[in-house]
Picture 1 (cartoon, one colour):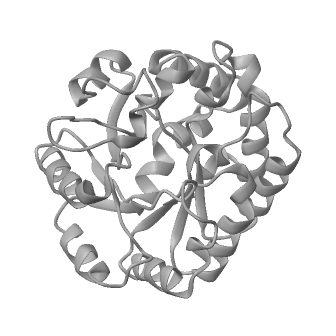
Picture 2 (spheres, one colour):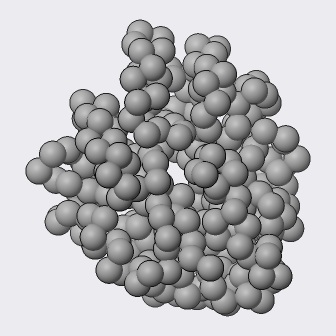
Length: 280
């Protein structure tokens, strides 16, 4: 069965600024569009959620407004929009507006911010408001920050969280100890709805992303969360740093076939995503 991509980035340089891509040559130039993604996935992905791309601060709301048109015309199933929970001014208004933009969840990229940001009372109060509105918050933190992710989730029990990129393990470095401990601790928290099987191909040493390289990390995630709490994401075009989306699909297919029944694999491919983001 085709996948639902829960983590598709799209880039339009004539509309928005992407300063973070400047030092990354494979991402620093050119656009990355829905048509490009469809061509690369070759019918193996049935639909996608747009994931905010960390555009320059001045552009994050304009990005969501533009992407809303792609949700309305059926190009995308929905979008996970950027937000600024650390700022009370205008936060509720942004949630109100997003109700009409095809937004199914939110993200504030935290691995590039001070560790204290997600621990603030105001930040947490606003994350709780996301839960009150029935939306999901994606956690994007480094492996060393997983205890902070747990603290945030426990402080906001009415909000469902999804952990991006398997908790950003250091695949290239090879040390699983602290990361594994953090993953297992997060899996024990009820409102961590799922972990994304995404991103980790780019964390392997250059040219080494393979089923053999990535399986120990994916196996740890499966042991902790089970097939009912894993969703799949391409992380395209960042996945180009780890062999590209076609290669990641091949690895995903092989790993799912080796580890899960067909029914369990379908949960990961699309069923869990439909339930968490209410995709119909």
